[in-house]
Amino acid sequence: MNPVADLALTVDVEWAHPTVLADILQLIESRGLRATFFCTHPDVEVPGHERALHPNLRRAGNTTVPPDVLRAAASDDVAFYRAAVAAAQAWCPEARGVRAHSLISDSDLFPIYSDAGLHYDSSYLLPLASGLAPVWRGSGIVEIPIYYMDHWDVREQATGFSIDGLGLERPGLKVVSFHPNLVYLNAATERDYLEARPHYHDPMWLTAHRNSGPGVRTLFLSLLDRLAGRETPLLGDVDAVWRAEHGGRHLSLMPR
Image 1 (cartoon, one colour):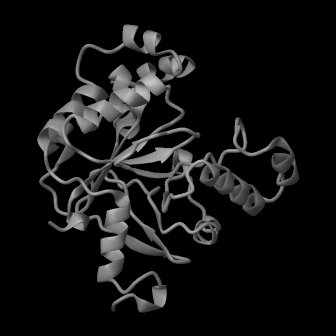
Image 2 (cartoon, rainbow, N blue to C red; image 1 turned 135 degrees about the vertical axis):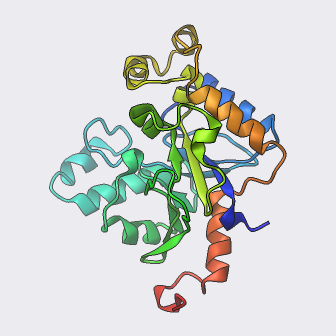
C-alpha cells in the first residue's frame, strides 16, 4: 500500500484536558489505528503515534512565548515566529512536522521551519478536494494539505456529519483533522463550539453538554469503524515516501 494515496488521521490537540485527550486516543487505538498528534503543550504522551508541532502564532493570548520575548518581538514577526516555534519544539523535540494553530501560513515561516529541522507543514486546508498530494513549499519543506477538518464542518455544515459526505471514494491524499474537544462534545454547530470554549478543561461539563444527535463524534466513530484494522499512515510516513519518490528535500531536484 502506498501511504501517499491513503487516508491519514491527524489530531490537533488544542490544549485538551488529559481526560479529553485520553478519550480520542482510546477511540483510535481500540481500532488498531495510528495518528499524527499536533501538540500545543507539554506532556502529550502518545506512544506508537507521531507527535508534531502545533505552535500558537497569534500574539494575543500566547502563553508559550516568554513575555520579555513577546515584548522584544513586538514589531518583528520573524523573531516572534522563531520564538513560538522554539517554544513548541522544547516539549516535542523529535517532531518533524508542523501545523500552525489557526492554520496560519506565512512565507517567512518556511525558512524558520527548515532551520528547526522540520520536514513538512500541514496547514493548508483544501476541503473535500479531489486529487490532493504533497507539494514542495521551498526551504526544504513539503506541504501536506488537509482534506477535512471538523471545525470547518461545524462552521460550514458540509457533510451532515455523515461518512458518505466525506467523499472517501475521491482520488488523492485525504488528511483528516479532528480536535479532541469537538469529538468529546460531539459538536454539531458553531454555537456548540463557542459555548464549550470556556469549559474546555472541564470534562464533566463537556460530558453533560454532549450533543445526542449527529455531530463530530458520531462522524469520527463512523470513520474509525470504516478504517479499523488498516494501516493509517503517519504524516511523517507520507513525507518520507513522497521525498523518496521525488528526489529528496531540495527544490532543484523536483522532477519536470
